[in-house]
Amino acid sequence: MNVDIFPKKMFVTGTDTGIGKTVVSAVLMVGLKACYWKPVQSGLTEETDTQWIKRITGLPESHFMDEAYKLQSPLSPHASAAIDGIRIEMKALSLPSVFLGCNALIVEGAGGVMVPLNESHFMLDLMKQMGFPVLLVARSGLGTINHTLLSLEQLRRNRVEVAGVVLNGPKSPENREAIAHYGNTRILAELEPLPEINCRTLEEAFSRWAGVLC
Ligand SMILES: Nc1ncnc2c1ncn2[C@@H]1O[C@H](COP(=O)(O)OP(=O)(O)O)[C@@H](O)[C@H]1O
Ligand SMILES: [Mg+2]
Image (cartoon, rainbow, N blue to C red; front, side):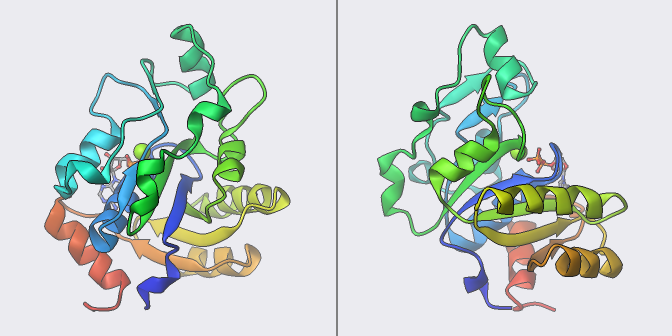
């Protein structure tokens, strides 16, 4: 596989929360030596996605920027912001200009496509505003076809460019084929469960994606 199938700038979304967006982003970060931005972090009780990616990849500070919104409660951003007494403003979610010089850039969303940011905007609107191709992370197993096709449909209806799907979890050739066929999309990569997540295992995963290892 040619790693050029991955866009230089991409918005990583998922069919759900906890689906593997951050882990897939970390594989791409290590492989592409990319910059990373998480514009909206919802939930501050555990390590944030940015902190986790920094620690695991060991990439320099210059590859990262602070989140535009750091919301206390691990809820949908609209609800978490309300608890913090603020409203998420779309114009505060413009890409920081410091990222313009990056070799590659990964912007990670929160949750999935139809997660509300405020009373009238969704994560989808942020994808439209950014204008980068979207990489959709989906689970590999049962139930994924419905979630993935719905997410792809909504992205396309809104004329958001879809780079393709990354399937996370134990390989399922049947689901892979169904998503590629019915979703009329590319499966960019598959990520199997990693027994341990560290810089080396992420690098190996990327090498498998790139066809360097078998
Ligand atoms: N391929 C994988 N191998 C091992 N652990 C994984 C894998 N994908 C996800 N996980 C674990 O599952 C949890 C949720 O993944 P994460 O990437 O944080 O999801 P999201 O960013 O979509 O919320 C994390 O604890 C993560 O380490
Ligand atoms: Mg995440």
